Image 1 (cartoon, rainbow, N blue to C red):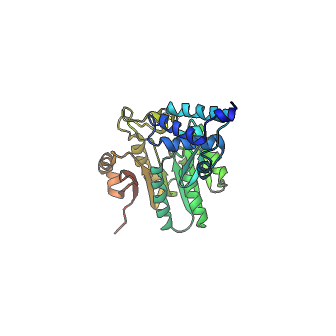
Image 2 (cartoon, rainbow, N blue to C red):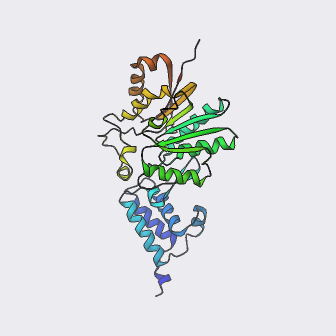
Image 3 (cartoon, rainbow, N blue to C red):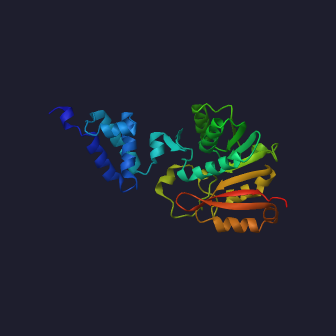
Length: 299
């Protein structure tokens, strides 16, 4: 028999891989398709049209290698080296947090706030990671012909390496300035300068037993933050008033069960409760997911 006769079709390989991946992924069929797309260099519609074609032995072996990596819970985004966010493909890999769909809410809120502001916008993205939030906001503002500058900061050299790739990938160097910083550290000379500050900080509790196995591959410092998962958020809330302009706003992502803890923290902080209003927003799954902190309007 020829090698071609012995080879599996693309469709059969996808079916078998999806069955094996079902034990580790709720999106096993999609995972299998994404892995096959990587091996064959095809778009999804092309893959669908070629289901009956046979895989060459080398492609079959390469696909099997990727399937085995996924069975070990390695995230699809790391295996592919790509993750879509806000309709944009971002380069990602070990050492940088994988952008999640829920975080698109921060982009929506920031853009809605920007639409109500006039003049040049000064924006800070704290803990930028892959640069997903900054690139998404910058792409939209650029298309709207707004004048703006984004300071995108992260403490991780590896994260900044990926962020730079993504900024360059979409030609946004003139709009996004990347820098190494532990939160506000690099902004000491920029107090009361920002119209919008946005952050997706770590917010998982250190002893959270519900954490998915896939997260073991992502940088721990981008995920976990103290016994309640709120150490970073509290630090940001404590410091952010120094850096906002009058009329500015701070947007921050948090965990689905943390709203009440955050409300209590703000309520018990006399300066925050006296001078700021905090609003909360739900994600598409109807979980509390983001907050907006803004100055109270003077009557």
